[in-house]
Amino acid sequence: VYCEMPPLAMQAATVAVNEEGHFVWTPGCTLERSLEFPNGRYLGAALLGSGTYGKVIECLDQKHHARVAVKAVRRGCPAFKAAAEREIIILRDLNGLSHTPKLLRDFEHAGHVCMVFDIFGESLKYVIEKRKEEPFKAH
Image (spheres, rainbow, N blue to C red):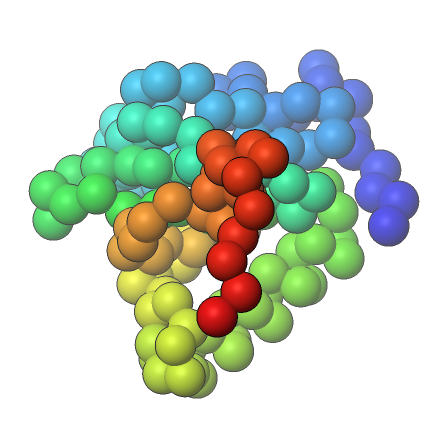
């Protein structure tokens, strides 16, 4: 999928974005500013994963004082935004059933569609990388 991004000079100065439209995560970054949380409701703590579609950031939800995972989808690409909106509809409909993660809430932050989930465990990618050459047992 080819997505054209506006020049970096035209992007919001308050949000770091790379040339592909990915949210640039830094320790202490904040997401979802509002009247209730003018400095941001979610405080970034760690990068949990990244890929073509976006990044997943471990955050502190300052409203509920809980650790959550925030998936921030690449911005500037209508195909990714549409896919994220479909994903939100499906996750709302499933509501955590059929062994799917429950979508706690969603929002848009500086053009990034964001989805909030409970934090579970390590990602499959991390587990595979950590094991390196050690084979998995077939059950």
